[in-house]
Length: 197
Image 1 (cartoon, helix red, strand yellow):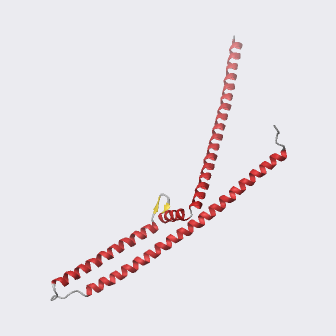
Image 2 (cartoon, rainbow, N blue to C red):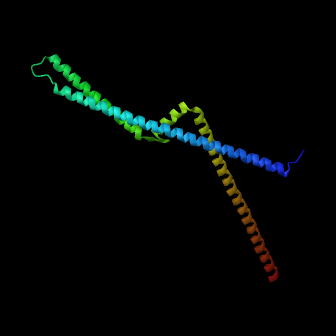
Image 3 (cartoon, rainbow, N blue to C red):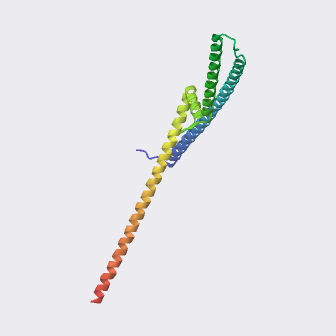
């Protein structure tokens, strides 16, 4: 079996470093593209919330104006009972419509400012949209994040093992020192005991 020469070792090391740099560059590119795409989706969601708020506000305003017109067109005392009932029904429908629109507007505002365990609700919506529109990018991003988590976990495990090894080594060293101290004390006692006799 042929042993690798120093040149071959240097060549292998250079190739490995080149691969690591390419992976790092790909990771950086993926992260940058993912962030850019997600931010664009998030901006789109913010704009969507604003458009919906404006639309609902306009609908509420028009419904309130219609209610005012309806209230000003109140049938007189001499009008037929059916006319009065229709008018009351129309007022009730407009009031219900205004109430429903206010509820929707409040819900849209809540969504725009709401957060959950992962961050803002809009960010989750933007992520799901990005996942639907660009699943390859999201998959690459998740793989990148998984590799980073593994690397962090491995780094923590190495550090923990190193700390344990140091503690074990320190414990052994302390045990050796302690044993030597006991031996020296025992030797002194024995020497002293024999010299007293």
